[in-house]
Every structure is written in structure tokens, then in C-alpha cells.
Image (cartoon, rainbow, N blue to C red; front, side):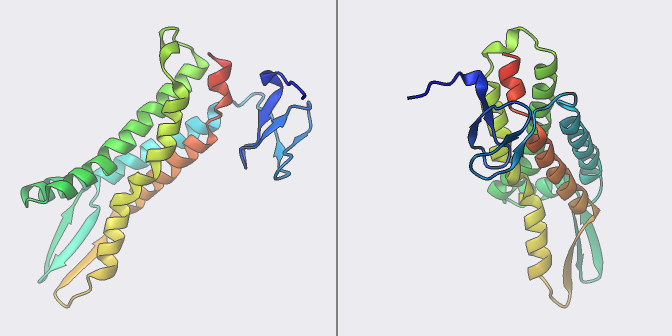
Length: 199
């Protein structure tokens, strides 16, 4: 049996297969994809996606997510406005789900990614007990749930086409979808090897 030092192993970014580091030209043994080692730009790509996601999140909360026309009367509601409206109408579970998925999850992801990006570049010393791999995994798992709000709006807009009632997606829906998309890219661009390197 061949024993290989853990430092000589390298992970394929495409299929996650573990490969032996052969130096400059590494190619995945399973999918054949080239494996490059980061040199200069360790966190910049992830920062760029994350800042774009945060910028897109601002109009997503300021502009209306849902525009409904009922008997000629137009009503617009933002994300938080919709949460309050659902809560006041007695739809507590739906209100809680929308609040969690559209407010809590994106903010949690922003904070976790900011923490990870800062801590891998400037180790804080006291944060060695924090399992950063688990934090990163959590952002990967909860990320897609942020799209619940957009799905609800899309379903309502597609299903409700009555003569006197019309529901369309507002400007915030596009901004929110972009924010979620760039957050996913930021998490994907984050190199997990930096966590191990800065232990």
C-alpha cells in the first residue's frame, strides 16, 4: 500500500476527486479537468461576487417584489411589506418561511462569507476553534433556499390570470434573483484550501 502525505494531495474543483499533486501540470484522474493552483488572486474573485450580491440585495429590499392589480387598484409590496402583510392576515407559517428565506438566509450568507474571506487572509487567532469548513458547508446548503421568494412570485404570476386580478413580479424580484445568483458564485469561488492553509 502506498502512503502519501496529505500535503501532496490536491482536490479537483469540478468533480471533487482527490488527486496526487504532480507539480505544475495537474489533471484530474477522474474527469480529466485541469487543476490549477492559486498563486496571486486567492480571494479577490469571491470578494467581487460577494460585493455585487450585496449591492443587488439593496434594491431587492427597497423596490416592490410583487405588484398586484385587483379591480383596477394597484398594490405594491416589498419583501418585508409582504412578510408583515402575511403575518397580519394570519398566515404565520408562510410569513415566517418568507422572512427566514428572504431576509435571514441572505444576510447570514453575507456575514459568513465576509467572515471566511477575512479570516483566511487575516487570521484572528481566537477563531481557531470555529469550524470554518462547517460554516462554508452551511452556506452551500442553505444558499438555494433563498430563492423561495422568487419562486413564490413566479408561481403566483403564472397561475393567477383572472379578469379582475393580475399579479406580476416587481423590480425587486430581478434584483433578488441576481443577489442570490452572485452569492452562489461567491461561495463557489471561495477556495476551501485557504481554510486549511490558515489553521
